[in-house]
Amino acid sequence: MKTNAKKTAATALACAIALTATGASIAQAQGGGTVAPAPTSPAPAPTTPSGSWTVYKKATWYGPGLWGNETACGMTLAPNMIGAAHKSLPCGTQVTFTHEGISVAATVIDRGPFTKGYTWDLTKKTAKKVGFLEVGSGPITAVVSPPAS
Image (cartoon, rainbow, N blue to C red; front, side, top):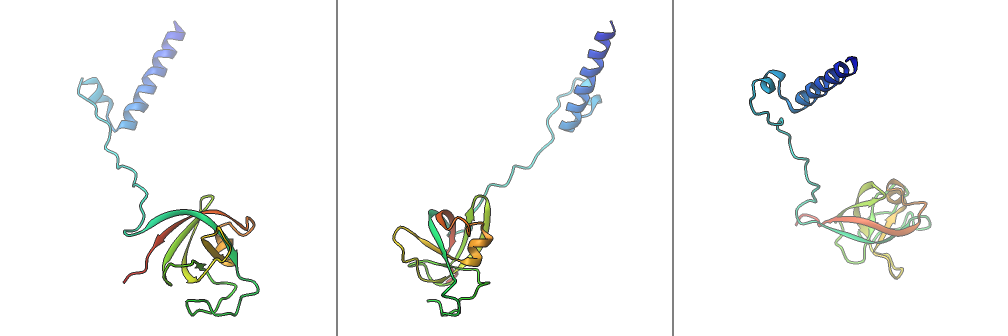
């Protein structure tokens, strides 16, 4: 008989925990009333800024040997600069790069890459922040947000 008492106690405890999790009281359940789960907020859906688009393209990185030179967008390329080169996007276009779950926001500051098959040239600092420096080149996700007009 002790086994049945333990099972009954365990069942009662499990029911109490379940009722507490739903926001209902034991009194509500015993009174025969309907027990509705506590309202929950839906998880926010991942969004991209209005007018943005996502692309999955190949990238590489650049910098050493070019530091001190002027970029196509009129900036001086420096070792600590966060930015990217693209062949046709306007200077100032905001791009969020993601590689293996790590993201970094950058701005189009230059033209390139000029290696066939690549869409993006990340500055060395951008590549390092997104965890792409050791990889050197390969696919990357980019959310592109054009500059405000």
